[in-house]
Length: 147
Image (cartoon, rainbow, N blue to C red; front, side, top):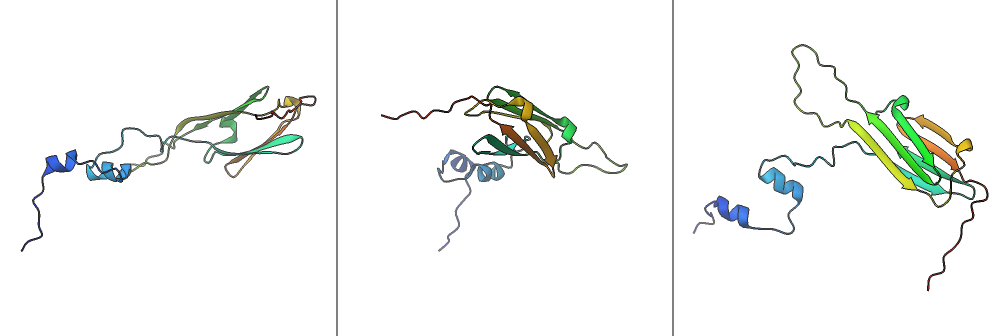
């Protein structure tokens, strides 16, 4: 008795496995994904609220602080950064793989109260941007009853 089965490429392509991981599917067909969503530069954030201010920590590794821009309009906060790629190649070298991303990264979000733009504090250390956004005085917060 033989447990071997003949390989049928048309049957392999036509069969749909709902539990198959997308990355496994691409590696099975030895293709690279067309979309590069995971490789694009991203800004990951934590936003906390205290009584009189918002605290924002945003991870933007590998960026010079001069390439980071923060704009505030009322309660809308926008963070953008330009991630640059090193262009140093030596004679006789060739790039085999390049997974570090470069390009423009941006993130915008709304807060529950307006920000007092005159007292905003920002610092950038070890790839983390820290923003202290004090709430504008006189901006009432109200609870909405749910019926």
